[in-house]
Length: 226
Ligand SMILES: C[S@@+](CC[C@H](N)C(=O)[O-])C[C@H]1O[C@@H](n2cnc3c(N)ncnc32)[C@H](O)[C@@H]1O
Image 1 (tube, rainbow, N blue to C red):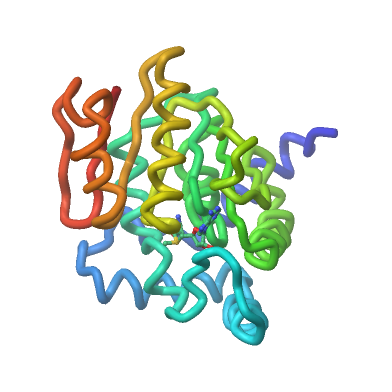
Image 2 (image 1 turned 90 degrees about the vertical axis):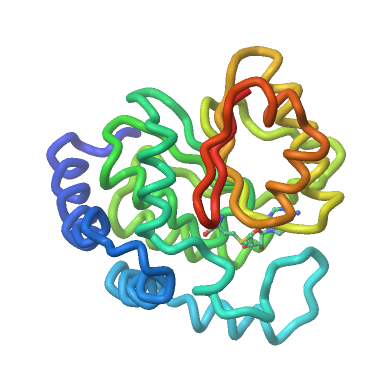
């Protein structure tokens, strides 16, 4: 069942107010990480409690539980810049491969009307917390799904835009890039790759992505188009 139109609009405005500083951000990484901590709190995330619970038990996949959540997540302001570069159109789908708390979904809903977001994340606890906060704001076009991207029988949903930030081992990233290669046979896709491992894998092993169109590089992220 859909959310009533007026409720959707008012929750989008509330969300946008809480993210209103993003377009004016300085681009200073430490500052943006610090600001993102404040935004997490303002949105109502209980990241510390979830991470403490995760830290209390051994983890199978590489979930980055040993690092601060501000280190393994992309700052909100940088996410906005990545999305502005991807420039999704109404009706497009943006997929975050290893989405943690689904930050990108909040930025998509606040700044990109009618664009859909899907986040895959192997930590069920992070997914549950992301879903709880998404429900608080009635995010109707964003979805978080608990999923191990490495599972042999899994392929990501077909989309126009993917975000890939060094989510796991090099093997896991390679498997996901092969999945994207299959998807790209059906039409051009854009991949925003953040971090050394993802960019290195694309540059060395995936000419279908790195060599067809010129990549756009910034300090942390490269945007590729097949
Ligand atoms: C570096 S964080 C990036 C989070 C988010 N994309 C961002 O940039 O803010 C990578 C996330 O991928 C998740 N992850 C690691 N291995 C995974 C796998 N095999 N399948 C799905 N998610 C995975 C981790 O739990 C972590 O939350």
